[in-house]
Amino acid sequence: MLYTLHEMSHAALTPWQLWASFNASAFSHPFSPLSYSPLSRKIAAGSELFVRITQRYQKPEFGISTARVGGRETAVSESVVLDKPFCQLRHFERDLAGRKGRADPVVLLVAPLSGHHASLLRDTVRTLLPEHEVYVTDWVDARMVPLIQGPFHLDDYVDYVREFISFLGPDVHVISVCQPTVPVLAAIALMAEADAPVKPRTMIMMGGPIDARRSPTAVNNLATRKPLSWFKGNVIDRVPAKYPGAMRQVYPGFLQHMGFVAMNPSRHANAHQDFYNHLVKGDGDSAEAHRRFYDEYNAVLDMPAEYYLDTIKTVFQEFSLPKGRMFVREQLVRPRAISKTALLTIEGELDDISGNGQTESAHGLCTSIPEKMREHYLAPDVGHYGIFSGRRFRETLYPRIRGFIRRHA
Image (cartoon, rainbow, N blue to C red; front, side, top):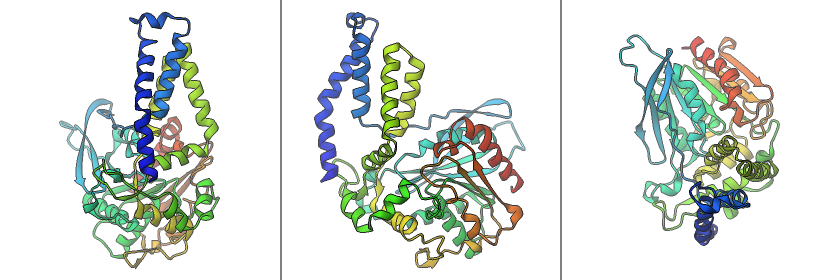
């Protein structure tokens, strides 16, 4: 019912959005006489702000067509190398024709399945590309997956990661950002336990809830204050009939987006007010920066209900992995089985999603990894998104990641 009401509200707003869009253009276009009225900039700015607040945002493209490799601008092509019902493994292939002998490390970048699209890691991919062969997990919006494909549980997520690692071979380096640190650690532990022929060279875990009991954040507290039955009854809904995944149970992306905004409402309100002021003043660069950020931030996807509820229960309520009680398809996950994969954990000092110590706790679980193959870094004055994007990531964190990968390649 909640999903249906959401769709109805969007439909009801459509005429107003069209009118606001017309006003935004009519009061700003240089060939329109309305743009020369005394209040034209304020009307245009207010109209555009209304459209941006109420519109539906589509999945953004990665939009990476080139990378500077070895000092030369190199073409990059994006392709799907494994197509699963709930995830596409994307390869960003660099045109290295004529550069014989160049063999950069292969990186599997495991993007979060936590509301945003994998394109949120665009800056991570762009930074890695000059010196790495990059593959990314691009999770599919659950409302686009037909019901006939069946459910998707946390166990299925672990299976996908294992399959992707096996596909990429024994020289792969796995980077997991935020939510996937738990299933990635589980996947690599199970592969080590089974003595699989393919074991990653390194696993780099960034800002993830390995042990959500440490330095709990608002996200952690919400999960522990409410019983699992509350989440089932209040945030799970069925996909409306207009989508391919009609009748599939999901945690809707618009609810996740509301949760994101509710964590820092004043910051978002101030950002929108600043956007309005930038438009009124004619500060196009600042306004465009706002558009780029919120085009990404406001584009959300639905998560399969089974996976979402499994994650709430396993990671945030029962703390199964750090307690040694996490099972995947009835097999106990033993991180201490990992001995040949090097471990680097990275946290942001100001992270308000995964508190300090949550990711570092992986070292206490992976006791069979030699000390010389383990590192931890706490990035000063860095928040959650700064762990994987932005200037500080490029200048401070990426060099550490690059060096760690090469030391253990």
